[in-house]
Amino acid sequence: MFFRKPSPTTPLHSLPSQTPSFSKSKDPHNHIITNKLKYTIFLSLFLLSWLLLLPHHHHHHLTPLQNKTTTTCQGSGPLFYIYALPSRFNLGLLQRCHNLNIYTNMCPHVANNGLGQPLPTPSWYATHQFIGDMIVHARLQNHPCRTSDPHAARLFYIPFYGGLHASSVFREHNLTLRDALAVDLVDFIQSQPWWKRNNGKDHFVAVGRTAWDFMRTKDGPDFGANIFLNLPTVRNMSVLTVERHPWQGHNQFAIPYPSYFHPKTLSEMLTWQNTVRQRPRPFLFSFVGGTRPNLAKAKVRDHIVTQCHASERCILVQCASGDARCHNPMNVVEVMSKSTFCLQAPGDSFTRRSTFDSVLAGCIPVFFSEHTAYTQYVWYFPTERDTYSVFIDEREVNEGKKKIEDVLAGIEEKEVEKMREVVIGLIPKLTYTHPNASGVVGFEDVVDVALQQLSRLVLDETRSLVSADI
Image (cartoon, rainbow, N blue to C red; front, side):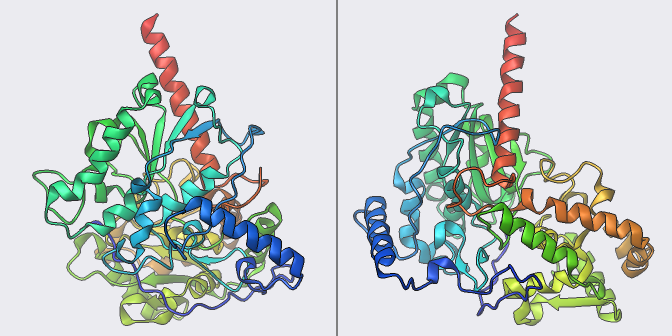
């Protein structure tokens, strides 16, 4: 099986900060504003925006976006146009947030435009790992490169919450019903004039789950997937997903799982980078995760747990044992912040949100499969893998040829410091900026990088067509 069961959410706590400027006050969304005039104005605008967004329903889990756009990109990406889809493809799905995931209630997670519940430290949220559909949509709605003129757009974004829908119908035995919304979307998009301009080559969609959840085949096992990514129309566009199919994903491009930090300013980002740079790291390595009995591709986890248990230089947060730290965002980041290396083993699928948690914590990721990062996030990680990560072939661990602690302890301290600095430098481009950030934030985030890369793809495609006509 290739889809993962989300872990339950437990009470959350704040991450200790060593930087005075990193405030411990409550998130601004939860503040009681003492100035009555400001409060009245804020509340009036809030309610007005709410009513405009959802005139016929009461949705306590939605936060209205700022309705602000600008035509000045200032180099942060190409102009793009957002399709105004019927609500059944995105916001309408949130009306049944209790049933969007067969394993957990998603209502707390779709709050704040998909960022989830705010944590006590500003700009930190208990963000669900499979909520990227919403976060990308929210970020693009307020992006400075958004245009309301489709004639001026180089890219066309289709705001379909495919991941949220997919997880709601994993147990639907009627395949026609399971696939119905995806087929409906394709029919709608194909009827649009802008699709016909380049037959969809300049269109893209972002899904918050792995590609496996959208690639059911007639001959393969049925673990709940639909056929969205196998539809010919969809194969013509670009698909952003947290995990691409390593062998069949020619039009799939992996984007990072959302972690917990969603800053609005460059100052917040620099403060956090400085915080993790200065953190003492008394442990050589750590592993946050559990074993996967009877899952061959996750066998290395058994050896990781055994070796970590046996080492005084390793922190083990074993999820399967019910360790509350495993489900607490800030505790996960705190454990990783105390570690020099963070082990990233395949689980139910090749990739892990934990990879991006470790980078956020300034912890050097250690991979055991090529497909956990190297064949996935080519837009985001350096080509030279040794500059930011360690690779230990899982077969050598499983066969007892290599001991993890020995490999990591053998890396010189000077090299470790260089690698950590590269990792810390990657934090901005692996972060999803808060969707309410105004204008150009001052650093490129996940969405900025994706827009630039998608633009290059479209330009290359256009040049190829022109060359073919000559």
